[in-house]
Length: 254
Image (cartoon, rainbow, N blue to C red; front, side, top):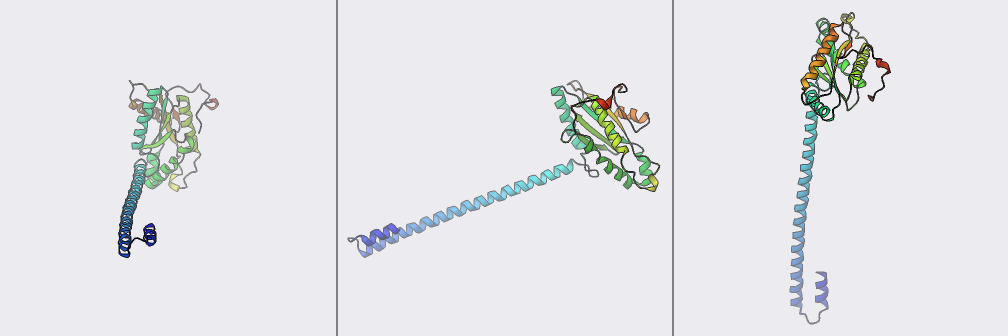
């Protein structure tokens, strides 16, 4: 438009009327072009704003879904993994152990005299014991490798991928000793109730002919044997009496 004004004002042969028409035409085209560009830019801005809002909504929905998933995988009382999450993780660990032919160990843990504690001191005291015991497991297993979960009631399970029977026994014994050193619960009614655990361990190198249920049944049988032998002990499938567990050097690192 500026060039047109300069051209019209310097052209000696152009009449005033023709110059006005020329400038008016260019001014109209310039105004129309500006309006079109403004409308296009507004459409782009609105589209980008809607895109950002959709992304924020999607991110917020993803975070809410993550939070809900995390809650659905956690035991409401103890905050540790629940049975549902254990079942899924156990199936994945079993499939991996089958594919690479490595051992898979499972610990079944039960609180001794838990029913007597509940009957005498009430379920709130029992809940306190469950929460206290749940805090012990993370200190005794490998982070992001092993899995400790509440199996149900006063029973817990620990999944140890790539761990043989000797190391599984050592982990169970470590947890048993840690529980023994827990501060006594200061309640008059519980003074003659000693809080301890019994633990059964089982180890398999799974094959396609085996079932994950076999390992659970073996660990449950070992737990029953630990209970029948006097409680407050760890029982494994093999005779470990001749093994010096304290001197074993393995790759199991906390």
